[in-house]
Amino acid sequence: MNTLVLNASYEPLAVVPVRRAVILVLTEKAVMEHADSGKLIRSATRELPTPLVVRLLRFVRVPYRRKVPWSRSGVLDRDGRRCAYCGGRASSIDHLVPTSRGGASRSWRNTVASCVACNQAKADRTPAEAGMRLLVQPYEPKAHRALVLALGVPTSEALPDWLAAAVT
Ligand SMILES: [Zn+2]
Image (cartoon, rainbow, N blue to C red):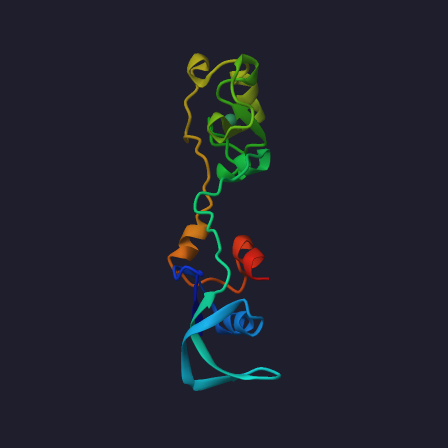
């Protein structure tokens, strides 16, 4: 069974297991807004009605547009460890506009996963100059999780970092 968690401003934030909602109430991080008094939950010291909706006492800023920091392994993961030029196994990162020619070195949109052979064949050129076509377009990954949570989709036991930081 799950409980809806509201922000201090009454906006829905997340759906969490009842057990976790009870802990929020017992530790005075949240108050009950709606409860099922027909079903009591016993803690070591108290008896509580089952919380259906609880509201945090402290306002939580939801990072809807959290940016994912660039990393080499992040680019490899994003592209499924496949070379953006030949589809083979990628073990290196290629800069579309080479850094030696002013291309951004730590940019999601200027980097793709690449195999060593394609990377060396392309060398100090853009894909167009090298006559190499991209099988995939590079993009900036987004942290969707916070938004999904804000819409009230049930979560696993683990709380997202930003919510855990606010309530623990
Ligand atoms: Zn390749």
